[in-house]
Length: 109
Image (cartoon, rainbow, N blue to C red; front, side, top):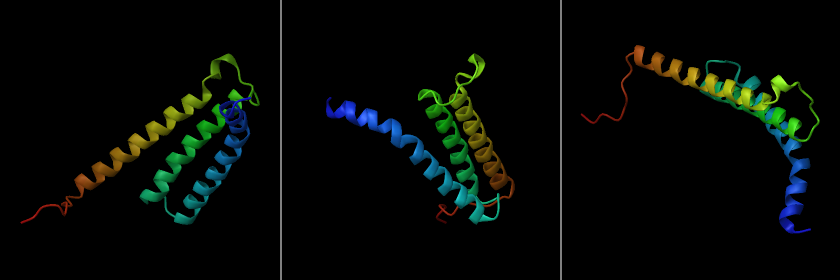
């Protein structure tokens, strides 16, 4: 067995625990922020949704999660949800900033 095959076989067993550790870290960040309005908590929620999609994808690849034929791409669908959340979050933050008439500091008068 070559070293690349060894690494690929070993990565199957380390991916899920590392995803669960990262999920717990970002959940902790969301609970410590105490406000959903902060950018830190919103980005953390985006990453949490993304990690859940990766967990679903990993479980399907390792055949630990059996889903119907209609939900075969469940992980990818969760990734799409995270991207939609991210886009809406950025759009709302930008529109709030633009409507509040704040000026950027990079103007040198």
